[in-house]
Length: 385
Image (cartoon, rainbow, N blue to C red; front, side, top):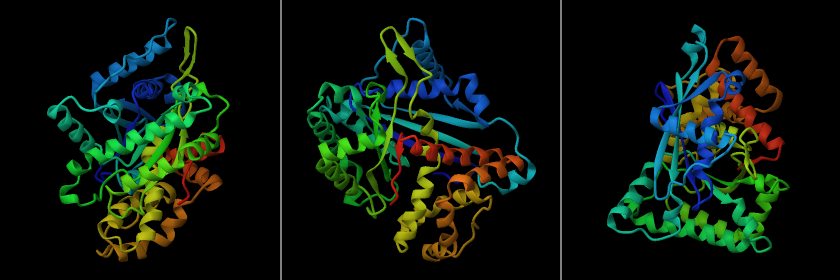
């Protein structure tokens, strides 16, 4: 998170070979280019790299075509994609003065599934794998994809696939640990929210997010615990870590013979809310619990003024007493209340932002409403810890 005039939020996507990462990304971006997206939202989404955006949009249109075609797989290709969220209308002068940043950027890191499933070909690829992982350490949220097609292929014995998938993730991370940690010292800045996401969820229409969570825990609960322990070994203050506590359903489209319904997506509209808002509310709770967590608590409380602005219209003072414990003492009592704001209060906050022509706050408050709505529809489970 960069609290300059541009707020940059990053998300890392991990999945095995063929789990649908390229299709998900293409469908996510392509949907934001549809005219109905602009009518529904107070912002546009633009790819910062024109070539990348053109390629993703072309992939999406290929799926939408009368003779649909899927994007080509990108084996062993590690790419980061940057998207800017552009407000449709200029904000009023009062809103411009109050807001803590002017623009929002989403960075999507795509980590090749092959690097979790097979050995690298030599020193050059090994270094590329390390460099790629380092580049996504600034991510705020990580998605671990579970492939619905593989669950169907192993119906009745789903644990065979799930245990293998999680073991590959665990071992892949272990193989990187010595190269990533300097002198074995844990990291302060690292993805702390790891969400299990069911990709191609349209293949299992009877499965809601609670069924998905229960399947994972019943079939591979020990492996989830082991994966968390490995990830905890990378981070300082591992209590501020969520692995296997949040769950999500994802589907790029509804697929049938000779037809791809790109309008029938599941969960993709949550990518922006997950990256832009979920870390703030989680970080507030963790920072409050850590209290004396030094650099970690300071890092976690960095988004406090963003959360306060989004939910209350008031920006937390930036010049608070230096020790992080005093900062927490000053801001946490009311920020904790703001972090759990929900329902009608959220709707009121968004309506207030629209009246004040604060389009940025309206967009971000809308993201929180989207997360709440997804929980009600049993698409998303959010950790309460």
